[in-house]
Amino acid sequence: MKNPFETPERAAFRETVRRFVETEVKPYADEWDEAGEIPWELHEKVGALGAFGFGVSEKYGGLGFDDCFMRAAVSEEFAQCGANGIPAAFGGRGISIGPLEKLASDDIKDAVLADIVAGRKGSSLAITEPSGGSDVARLKTTAKRDGNHYVINGSKTFITGGMKSDYFVVGARTGEEGLAGISLFFVEKDTPGFSRTDIGRKMGWWASDTATLYFDDCRVPAENLMGDENLGFIQIMHNFNYERLAMIAGALGMMKVCFDESVCWARERETFGRPMIKSQVIRHKLADMSAKIDRTEAYLNHICWQANEGEMPVAEICKGKFSATKALEFCASEAMQILGGAGYLRGNLVERVYREVKVQAIGGGSEEIMRDLAVRQMGL
Image 1 (cartoon, helix red, strand yellow):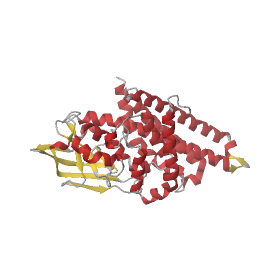
Image 2 (cartoon, rainbow, N blue to C red; image 1 turned 180 degrees about the vertical axis):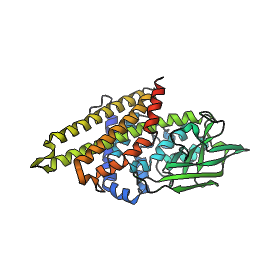
Image 3 (cartoon, rainbow, N blue to C red; image 1 turned 60 degrees about the vertical axis):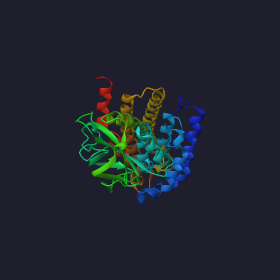
Image 4 (cartoon, rainbow, N blue to C red; image 1 turned 135 degrees about the horizontal axis):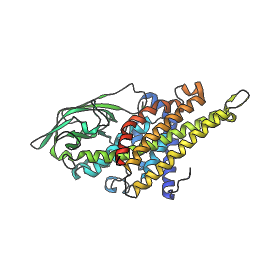
């Protein structure tokens, strides 16, 4: 589908990312997926692309500007490697850089931000807890002021990149229950009282390390408070918008994989003496898949345009998130039907997409939470 908001700069950036994925990621995607990790040098190569630099000052190695179309292009193109656990492996950095750049002290930024943006060091956002995920207002991890320190107690789980990250942006309760009373803190991996364990045996995202974090009287300097005390919820919600935009784009990329693989298979495979592509049943499946791809792409472009204009379209992002993941579920299922037994074999692009569908529908805000938030944003 033609993007009416395309510019030569955006087109060139997308093509650069596309070539990178084709040469540096796709040939190794299955190997890394089965190994359960990606080589650290890939983090640095992606950093060199500028993929972590949106909205970050050039002082810290950032791009010095932001553009939601380019952000979306990174997520969409990387998703077309068919294993979204690979971009998820450095996704923790992507959703923690924003709060660090906007809220951390100059001393913290000077010490760590350039290394994170360049991919030399890892960072993660630690919000989700064992007692609840999308309902951030019920956050239970606490941070109590003790002289020149805060003492953090609690745990976080399903933290993307959590086993290999060096730095963490941690949400903790500093005040009363509810939306108010939540603050953000910068925590380094070697801080006494901090520990982590790996979450293995996941249905998908094999190449992405995922952790449970533990804070047992974890003491951090008071200067590690990021932003104003008790106002962290607003910053968390703002950051979620970019994460959800990336997940819409990722779903779109995976849908395109399903369509392309289905067309390729249907052209080559013969049933009852003729290519599958000539069967009306198959053609209708492809038409339905293509229509869902076009709708998702058009909606994503509109969201990116609004965000670039300075108005973050929260309701539209929420609707885009759950509608994109439902469309991805449909396309993955139809592609599996078209490929039949071949699609069920490990190492097949469609197989990898199929088992990663549900995490797209849950991560970054479940479909149910997205529907509820969208309606509330609409004033209903």
